[in-house]
Amino acid sequence: MGSGKQKRVIPGTTLFDGDMARKGYALNKMCFSFNSADNRAAFLTDKEGYCDKYGLNAEQKAAVLSLQVLDMLAAGGNAYYLAKLGGIFGLDMQDIGAQQTGVTKDEFKAKLVAAGRR
Amino acid sequence: MAKIVGGINVTHVPYIGRAIANNLQQDPYWKPFFDGFPPVHQWLAKVKPDVAVVIYNDHGLNFFLDKMPTFAVGAAAEYSNADEGWGIPTLPPYIGDQDLSWHMIDSLVEDEFDIVTCQEMLVDHAFTLPLELFWPGQHPCPVRTVPVCVNTVQFPLPTAARCFKFGQAIGRAIESWDTDARVVVIGTGGLSHQLEGQRAGFINKEFDMMFMDKLVTDPLWVTRYSVPELVELTGTQGVELLNWLTCRGALSGDVTKVHGNYHIPISNTASGLLAMQVA
Image (tube, rainbow over all chains, first blue to last red; front, side, top):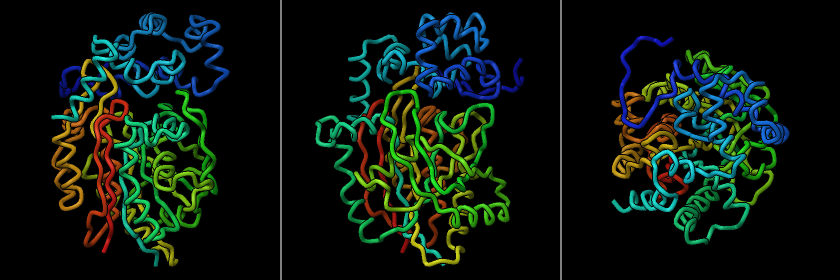
């Protein structure tokens, strides 16, 4: 799978293009379903069964069950849809940012504040 | 003919919704952001728009990857907000302007922009929060609305040059609408931020300042960058500046800055506000 085209490389960044949209479709579709409170509750009742219902592959399922954002992104997840999954666990964007960059939430927030002083 | 009174661009971070619901406008974290708005409120009270054309990107409320239009125009009598899944309050519906919607659709397609038309359309925080910020506490919102959704989610995104031309076509559409309505164009999103990956938290103040300056005086400046270059310079979500550029495209003639504000951070985002008027 893949377009075969040379892509621009931006370190630490994945452009959510056609290759990723194809790869991540089931995962993103599951996350899109979390707009509904009933679906969020159903997921919490049986996470694995809910993943299976949406046809997630093993990589996607492992990433979701371990709540590892970088793994979900590598499996084709899109940030906007994944944020709906994060919301179920009360994770905000600083929690998600800290996890992805390997720092504490306070350190991540300090980095954002520092960006305003430059 | 209808008159475009100006354009306003603003950040649309979801948590602004929670801050409004909890009355945190004067909280030390939020104050530098909310203090940017009174001059815009005063300007709006002076220019008195009847309709707002709101250019934004949907984050998975109305559109999913099953059908992802590059440009979509609402044509409904009313637009509802709904549960977006991340725990921000759902806001009351917004009144549409179907006459302007269909006039814009006719004019845009005639102008070779083959947009998707939506007689039913949920609107997410990127549409609702700017209206809440510009007309705080007013339900229903005192302006009629036409949503214009731009794909900034799934690449390929429209190029900066294409977005500017789309904005110009929106401007021509509005100005050929045979009414005496006063229209404000709103563009939402940005400025620099990146939610995902090892580069999460990326912010580029220097680029944002330049962009806000150039958008008023020389909007074609930003069209020199490809979309991947804009991602590199502003982050994966900073590319929402395409909505600002589309809004600017709708303003023709002598455009001057009414008011601007810029503050880092709101959530993970460099927040921006820029109101422009047309002479």
